Length: 114
Image (cartoon, rainbow, N blue to C red; front, side):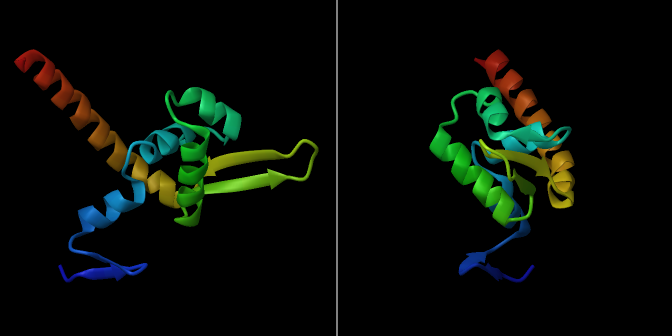
């Protein structure tokens, strides 16, 4: 496959490109939680252990910019914001599931092997 230039970054293969979109510590857990229901910021924060407010905000922003989630703001006081998964995000779920299952298997193998 030829090299792919996107947002001034050169990618050498499609796996690298995909993992740059959804990889890292927090994007997959966010998408995983939004796969079945719309959630508010506070719900996500409570449901994802160890994530900081700063990291949750930045990861939500990146996922929204990339088209994986939708942010809906309601004009009420206090402001109400909800996050939901988009079609692009839904397409990532089977990939995430395979990676998750592989990770669980690998963790089990490593635990038993030590």
